[in-house]
Length: 268
Image (cartoon, rainbow, N blue to C red; front, side, top):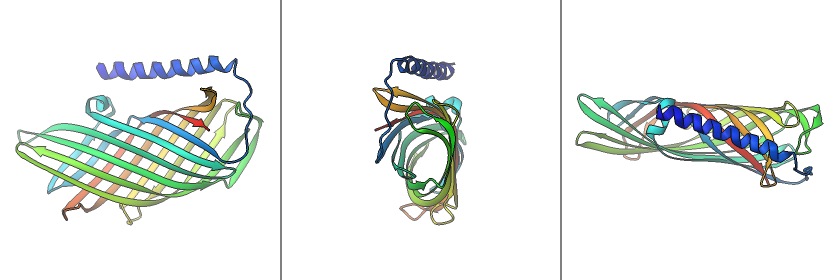
């Protein structure tokens, strides 16, 4: 019940923030779009559940943290995205650090698994297709539908602390996946918009295969006099990696992370 209450409170807080922003827009002066480089800063919260398998130091264990237990298992999370855009060309970096702990029983002994995941993705995108939809947004940009192929790399580091009875071990591994993908964006009206992106990578260079996909509903408004897009959506990240850790032992991480995302994108 506590988790449900927390989720309900978070949802209501987000709705209240959006309503306040809508009200503030009534007295907001018209924004004048400027040419040149733009910086877009996007902090977000990803309530990702984890499901899959891992292996370290000869011990195989399930990674199973459902969305309903996120608040019980989450120790710390920091996430954000920064884009630099000029015309059809853009560059971005997306980073996240998440620490989770799960407990389960193994042969009458309690197994404690603490996993720290650090992921940094960087890449470039270029608008290859654009269709004007008529009208302008509240940011004075044309309403349009766009297609932007992307290319980049995603660096992942996993550190796992495993304790079973008196036995404990710490293992870590890191790898870098090249990826290719595409971003789609469309305006519904001057404020509401939809966006989505997907990429696939790994190809045996780092992991065997990695797949990332996400979709968002956005609402344009102004916060602190800056053009801001409030976003809510869903994200899935699947990584299948097997290799040696830093001590020469096999490290396996075949895990899918998925869950809702709540955030905003502020333009500078």
